[in-house]
Length: 362
Picture 1: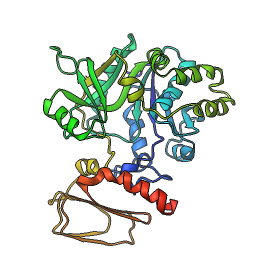
Picture 2: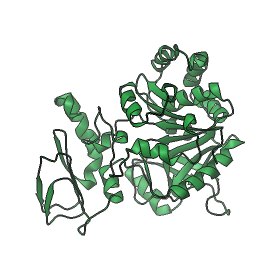
Picture 3: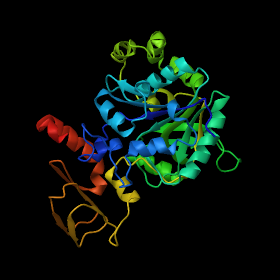
Picture 4: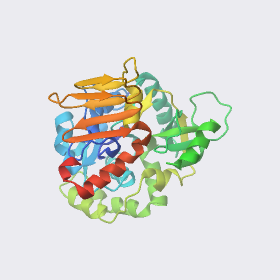
């Protein structure tokens, strides 16, 4: 099942600010064992793709600050498999860097791009759909993404509408509309229509297809990496990469290519997916008590329901009473108490902390 042309790009450079205060600048959530499985989210991601991708064809793209964390958690990965971005420039430059590096070594490569911090509960269904997507992208110019049935009007995801099709469930469907992170009113209308799926942020394409897309829609990125193609896998790579990144503006692959391209396809996928991007999503995935609470740590809860309470220090006792639908998170000197329905404000809280408090709290 492991095609030698299949390559994997794992994006692991984010800070996970919506999961603050547990996800911090010096130890983001992808390196943590959020669900208590014994493996970090990054380690789980690598394991998930082993049925379709050889270990030597896996690449991690991350921040320079996280090199040691990656090496510690994935000791079998070579330095050439750990791609270090000099600056944060969002997902388009990140994906381009890895794709062009793979292209320089294997111009026939087929690539799967995935975040490092998602959860897939049904791995078998996921792999089945991934193989469908790989087969579709392998010998064509299709840009393929996996689509997840939405469960709520979430403004943090991209939404995909496919064209009408009489074909059976699981087929590759042409995308009619790709909308990245709509406002709440639009997200509600998408959910009510029943015609939209979430963009899981997992992309599948042939390396020539994505190179053509960068050339067409993000030409400055394409030119920069074409100029440095002879430096990949050499001692000059880091210096050339810093020069290239200094020219880029931050832009996501969604805004930069997916919303513009006319060759985007989607494979519907029901595999127990969650991006674990927020406290609410963790509450949905984690095991709950009889009052629908998710409680971790030394906690005494009274008349409390529908809440998530996570205390990291064994030396700290939390006593809570009368809470309904709240987040209580205590970690490394920061205590967060926030209504679950207001969790989108956590990024706002963190930005204020960055401006007004010691950086150790960020």
